[in-house]
Amino acid sequence: MENNGLVVKQSKFDFNTTYAKLHDVLESNPNLKIILELDHSKNAASKDLQLRPTKIILFGNPMLGTPLMQNSATVALDLPQKIVVFEADNMVQVAYNDPLYLKNRHGIDNSDEVLTKIAGALNKITDVAVGN
Image (cartoon, rainbow, N blue to C red):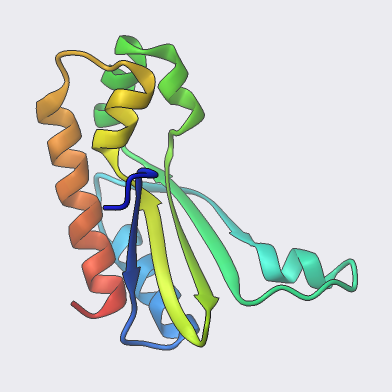
């Protein structure tokens, strides 16, 4: 983890495969719900702008997110969880907010077990997407 609170992983796959793997692993998990998918590069193209491939997917599990928001209302700025898949320097990468960074950012107390569970899930989900 970098000190800016991001976890960034390089994918072994091309952009479309990485995103498809991410989508599939999220969709197949009965505890998670995909809330929104946003294709930033497609939106840019609609205004005759160019942007390297960049998609973000928002998803959540109210059983884990709700207790965090009960603890600190401002964490709702960073929830639901989101993962971005992007291409930069001829590499496909995925990135997400480290939950332990969110703990400090929002002053979340007494939720280490939930945050550790979320961190582990995000790590596993993104490992599948990038081929680790």
